[in-house]
View 1 (cartoon, rainbow, N blue to C red):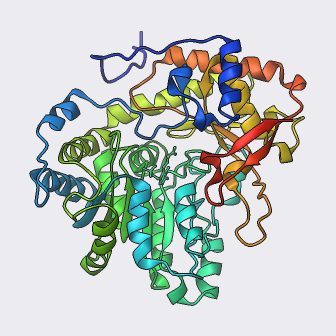
View 2 (cartoon, protein in one colour; view 1 turned 90 degrees about the vertical axis):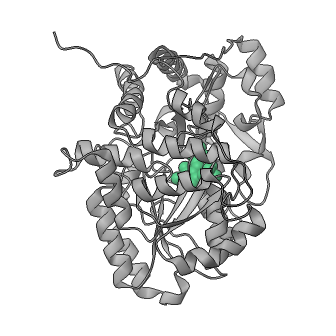
Length: 458
Ligand code: F0G
């Protein structure tokens, strides 16, 4: 008999979580103004809000924490991180930051000015926020196929090179400080980008004399999909694939809370020493001295170790198979989600689930609240609340997709938890006809409103 698949680790430490009653949850979500970010985590049973900083570190990472060098300048831990970034990713220069958006801040403070255009394949929300806050534009050049949730193609997160070239052709070079390629494409459903598309995006940028920035939060998951889906890569190791990916980029921003499996940390890395020098000022002003940025020595150690573990095939396979497992359960129940299952999350297609809720009443948010009420499972809205208002007209933007993301932390939950999540989604799906109304906004902030928005039931 063929042996079944199983995890590439065993568990040494556990953290209790608590179930609650529906009545309790009704009160808690009302107190949170129907914003899932505002719930106390103790009041959540299975927390799929994000896979960012929520993974379980390994015994080796915890050991590295004890070896951290907390010197202000030139710490051993900085050099450990530098070696890992050079050996695994191939970049010579970097600045540590406290997380991914801080890396964006350091880089964009240096290179973006008002009126610039930074095209990309579905910029992540903080990336877009940093661009629009600087009165620059972030046009989306993702392939159209990404918007059809039922279409199964292997690389659904790709850049549409025709859309990109149109912008590069029509815009003066000085107005495009860089192009952003996000791997995997989080907003489109954790969908990967092929090596071919990474290479061709890079060639196109360089043809127009423009730098390519790789937003690399989930670069290792992207490499796993290249290995398992793209012809010619099956026999290459993840680390070989990762090296090739980064050979095409001029800079990378990294939220290490994802594929480097730490609870906090990030960096921005460069090929060009002049740009690295230029960015140092913003790092020192906003993050810290250039050899620690926003990180403590122990965290830099854990990050260096995490980069090695995060690019290990067995570790990646364990993770991605768990996401796939949840997808298969949902298939059994006939529940529509962005297909195929992504690297870090399942994105439920809220428009196809809650067909009676009008878009003005925030369909994916309504589904998120229902799922929490059902079983204490917390996801996150990737829909019109996140899409925010148009910076010029201030009208609500209604994206083509209304998704509820169920992001799975690394090495944290078991497949029994996934069974609970799938059953909870099924129960909401079974009573979908009775869910006819959503929410209206009672408070929102001018930028990135989704984190602190307040809602009331209609
Ligand atoms: N880029 C991508 C693709 C991301 O997914 C994130 C964060 C960032 C940049 C910013 O990094 O959080 O370390 O500041 N994504 C998290 C998520 C928050 O839930 O998807 P950060």
